[in-house]
Length: 135
Image (cartoon, rainbow, N blue to C red; front, top):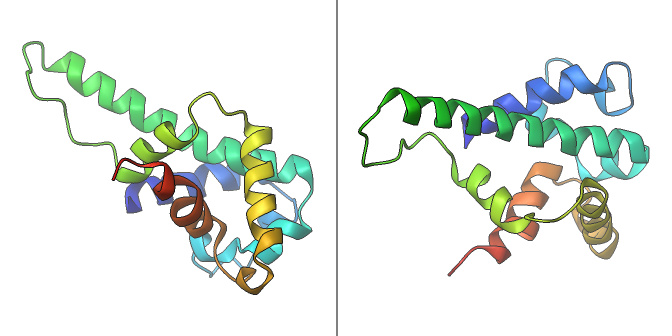
């Protein structure tokens, strides 16, 4: 999952440039720096770009995984490069638009004002993805 999170942070930095979300301190962990508090101060476009950054990193991992399979012509076992986060994102947000994902994050943060200091990726993972995974 750490590989995906680092990829997400890099994609996010490329997408956001000079926005409020990109204004976090450079020396901070990029995962922990985007909290619910910063999320709620961000514009809709910034939130959508954040989600697009995550989806872009996941797509890159899927393409790498697909290429690895194609390179192993007779492979019977799929490569194990997709993280639980990447697989969970696919399950939790299948047929869900970026706007709907942003709305779900917004709704969760608004419903839990005591949780505004939590990183948004932790909220997405623990509160939106994990509950949708098979038990």
